[in-house]
Image 1 (cartoon, rainbow, N blue to C red):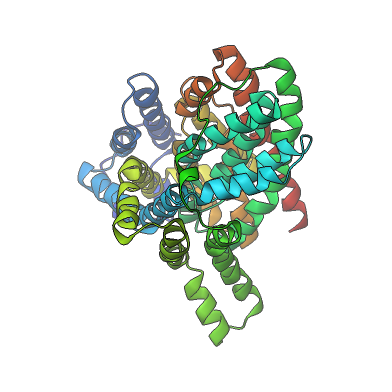
Image 2 (image 1 turned 45 degrees about the horizontal axis):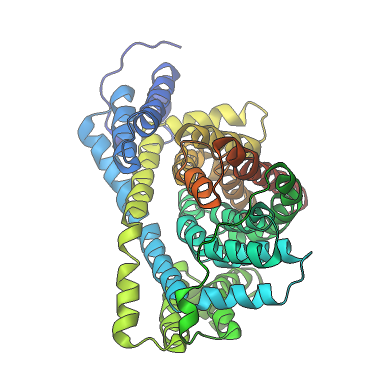
Length: 464
């Protein structure tokens, strides 16, 4: 196909019917160079992903031959819609997670589960703790929160920090990559127009066996390869010095948004259109409303349960937003990058190629996310970029297939964390490991989690 330069075309003209007017010889280099710019800026020049995604989107449009004013319009459209649809959910999730941590509710969950576990069942209990704590929290926040628990449990049980730590990190990472309301899955759901309730249900089904294999099972071997004692840190936690909400109340609060979202999914399947039950459950199960209800409920059940006054509760909520400002910008910029790929026709070109290639769409979605993850070190960047590339495919797929594509991308986004991933260095420094030891434990665990997650997604695709 000819690679001659085309006249500049407005993005408004590039619908699904007219996008092929730009030859593949121009669209393919535009996509490849745009992604290469994104990767180089993040990896080589350590530029913030928000700026890198913005410059990558502009590069795609310029090489595709689109007027820059239209490229900017496309980018801002995607940025705005993603910030409105996902940014508010990230903010609410951060508020909820901060209240859970500051009130001591997270500690109550941990202490209750660990206190009822024997030595042999401790790794399984730690996997459960990581998953429960990871459900409403961002990975970095959950990791910092879990470290004192991991060290205390390892020291008191006289087990290797790797033996009890890897299962907890597997639970945390699986929730981060596979289960909303984390940023990555939410962006993929938004980009692919997936059903949140169905994706949440499938995500939990995939996450449970995936955590079991990548966590307690793998930890048995990892602890033999790397035997590291727990450092003498975090002997006492601040939240132990005051009142805490009960375990039952904390679990009720944590699971409230999940139950509301699942209720909406069940209502869409079982209740007739226009019925009162479906109308109410559809409203309450909308992610924004479900998380808003959870935050308001947490202010009373967690905040008051810990003896926090109005001023303390407000301070906790306010302090939660600063650390996630960068995440919101990255996610929104990913939406802008995605919209640029769609409007230039690159996404449709990839969709047409895939549909005629005979490759499994789910396997391809996983591979695209893996490549971007390896290059950038960011699970979120991998998810938003892969979702943008593959978005046109979702239009002709069933509800279940789209949700499984979200999970395939999420599984690929956590593949083999290495030196360009901040999580790699956090684990290395907290556990006191060498680089090689971190690769043999944390990096290999992430790889097993990613591959196992894909395997269960493919198996689930055979039965739904």
